Image (cartoon, rainbow, N blue to C red; front, side):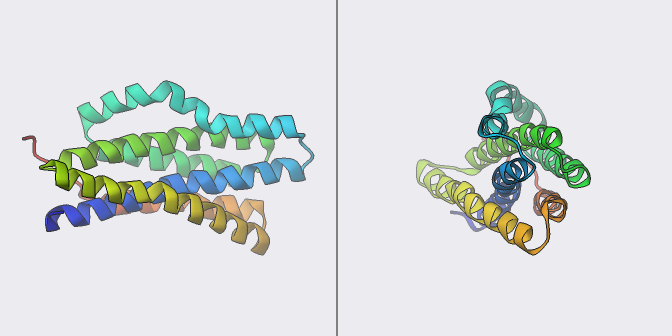
Length: 188
């Protein structure tokens, strides 16, 4: 992988980890909150299903939007949506707001993934480089699925759900910082 592309790929991986990790942390914490306040298993199942519902309808429009506006803008929007929904959940930690946050964070994670993959694909100059870049990009969801729930679990044990959601709302903002100054690859 070219040295110039290496720092860009690292920034993309960080952004993906932050947005997806926030979603996976919420995906662990929100059902625990629902069970703690007395919701049944069916309600928790509905809550978990909501993480994927927005991605069903947004995948193609997000891809088109990223093609028109570049990759950075949709990731910044996704990170902002994730942060705002967790802030609202941190202020009002109730089941209905958890459902809203689930939809918003599922949409944010899907948006970030599509946009990161789009940008990564445009960086590569040949098949060998594309394989290296996408190998790095593929690590992000795995790391996210480890660190997101771990962070949420540690925060719930140490504090409470409200503090957990408020801390989690800052994590996707790291993605915005990581992508500051990111420009679109020149078209070949």
